[in-house]
Amino acid sequence: MKKNEVAELIKNTLNVKSDTPETEELNEALVAQTKTYSLPTEALSQANKKNHYELYEQYVKDFNRISAELDSVSRSDASSNHSLFRSLKIDETFNLNAIYLHELYFANIGDLQSEITMDTLSFMRLERDFGSFDQWQMDFLACATASRCGWVVTGYNIFTQNYMNYVVDLHSLQVPIGVIPVIVMDVWQHAYYKDYLKNVSEYTQNMMRELNWNVIESRFQRAEKAAQALK
Image (cartoon, rainbow, N blue to C red; front, side, top):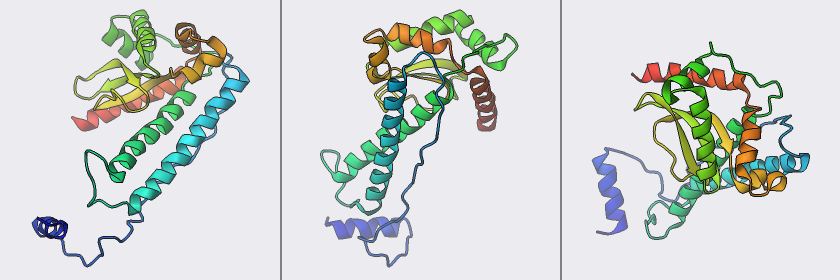
């Protein structure tokens, strides 16, 4: 069957009536914007903070370029073996995840007066689902050590209905389905190598001592509300 016959079959099946040329641009590009973060953490050097934020800005620029290119790329040439559409879709996810993972990370670190109390939702849920708060910390640290350049995420799983720790390699490998992130730690080597060389464990422990539990608590509350809405 020829390409134009396939397109006509799909249009008739979906009962779509359109005279729009196949090559017309969609002009529906998503646009991301950088946000500003003060990053007051004492666990990272100023040079490392600057490098980290510049990487985040580049992910935003790359995502916007990819999003614009997707408006006009040919869908009819899509292929699982090799196609521009496939490449752009893969890069779209990679860069979009990178943006939001960095924003979640930047927002939940750097609290120099970091403190969590036993009557908070975040403490009670972590204690419930990991056995104790200390067990959550040990599991989170183990995930950081196990990561192959990527992220550690504590998230609420809407299917299992509990909080779990996840290892995400790069920005888009092993990303769990149905998970609402509440705590995010960057464990790419560029996040710590300038200050800690290969010691990801020391870096992660220092960053965990400065977690912003006010920000995290609000995420737990939103996750619980979202979970209720999905029931």
